[in-house]
Length: 334
Image (tube, rainbow, N blue to C red; front, side, top):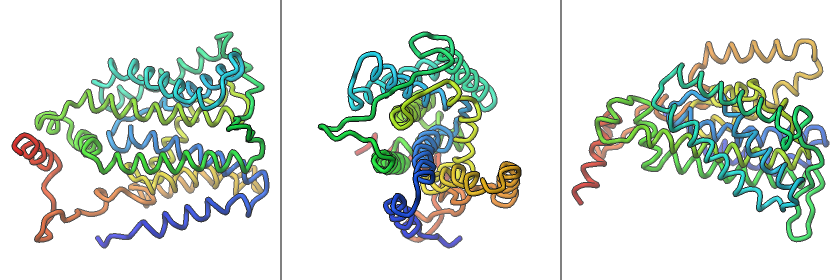
């Protein structure tokens, strides 16, 4: 299959993102901010589900952990926003390790059930704890202050979150092309064969799960300061499903596809708001049609659409576990 360059698509999306605040009103600017947050979340889940092949139905839990951590530290302890970020990332990582270490030996549906339960445990816990504001949540989260410059306008938050979204895309893209990313791909394609070739599948799964948790926690921190409040209703199971939908719709394992999928998942229902009685029905029909006629996603990952020639004579690359064995042999025999 002929390879389609993604560079023009990426450049167009980036330029549109830069000028979007000048072309929209406050309502669509808020929608754009939510789309950027979903891009960050979808990239984090893409590491877990796309690269490593782990079905996580409770990803909104890490989103909630980051949001509540920033909300509590800024309202109860008067911490500046920037100092809450490493704490939110660390707590998300710790929770990722605690839930991942005993459960990542599970596969497929069993892992999905465990992560679904974890997401609900976090939401219910937040609903009942006094420090998290119980069912009403946390309100009055102050705007971020950067050296005396207070972010108060929607455009300020838009560009701040845009920076995080771009950084997240760059990080996930580099991870996917790294040795660690290839190990995740080997595990996703054939777990037993990858382990036979020397990949520690539990360790690599845990690394993917923890990395995704950190990204989700950071997205939650930015969400908290943008909204000025957090409540348990923002982190229901539907949130996790929508994030997973963005990954599947865009193309599992594809950074560009996941970005496009997140934009569509947020923008399309809002574009159909004029037909409010039918918009979710239309949205659902569009999703079903996509799954039927484009199951690999809008912009599928390269390995799902073509066999890329890696050898000098243009022949097809060997199977993934064999590639890994060659890498291990080279590393062991310099």
